[in-house]
Length: 209
Image 1 (spheres, helix red, strand yellow):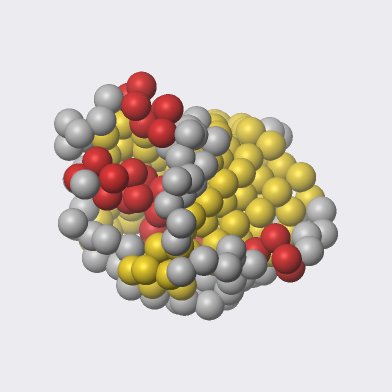
Image 2 (spheres, helix red, strand yellow):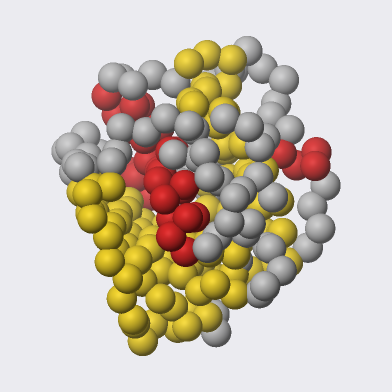
């Protein structure tokens, strides 16, 4: 059960960009290290995956992982995130307007990092759980108010401080795990709203421990 909950935490953290707000598909390479000792690096690669695909449109998004659990999350633009996993005939929900992680301090830094032609700025954040490095470029952004109430994953904080810029690289080191995501593909396109509609399955609350 502990390993299952850790997998869910990974998924939610990862689920978890021009002057025109981004709409389209973003792909990231991901790497996760479990600090609890419940899973090896190889197991996280197998179960969670090493590739994350985001579909983004305004306040709505969908995330898919390529691991054998086929984790998919659906955010329909309100205050709830729904998670579907292979082999489980139900959706697990979490409230995105809640977070136990609190910002202690933050600092902007200049960098020489360039990803897919985007020159990155860096926002470093210390919290009560650990720290985050958020690399961004304001040419790749969403509306500054799109996630103002999305406290899960500190999306509201990053959104506010960067003017809506989306992450190009994000490195996190918190109590239970380390993770890194890096943008590898950007496809601007109009997305049909049906992409963000969650499957018609029974809904249960996401377990915490």
